[in-house]
Length: 111
Image 1 (spheres, helix red, strand yellow):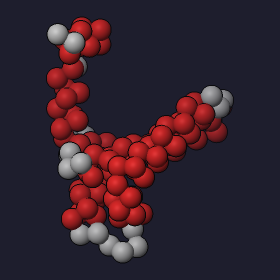
Image 2: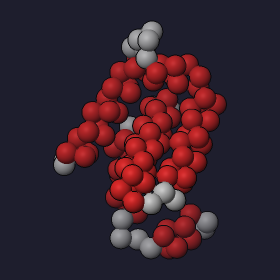
Image 3: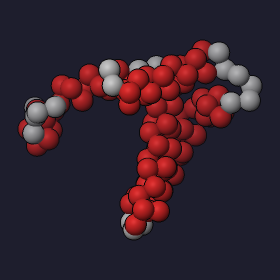
Image 4: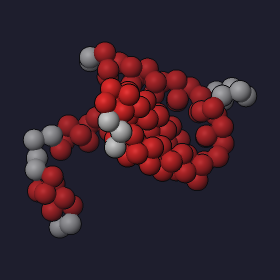
């Protein structure tokens, strides 16, 4: 497992721990307490910020996009944790799709 994967797995472990042992003063706990509605609103907000940052130019725009993408990924992982889905399950699904045309993959779902 490479360093990026290790980091995502470490973050997922922290998120799962927050779900199982919610500390009082934790942003992740606050999100869990708000359920799918609050987490979903944050994902939508962060996705909009990612798209806006993508329109910014130069190094500053690039750094802003990376920052916002990290926020979006974190909130998505919180939603997965709330649903008791581990990041490794997403990796498995992506692995299943790897090397398959997106058009072919989508067609296989509709039959």
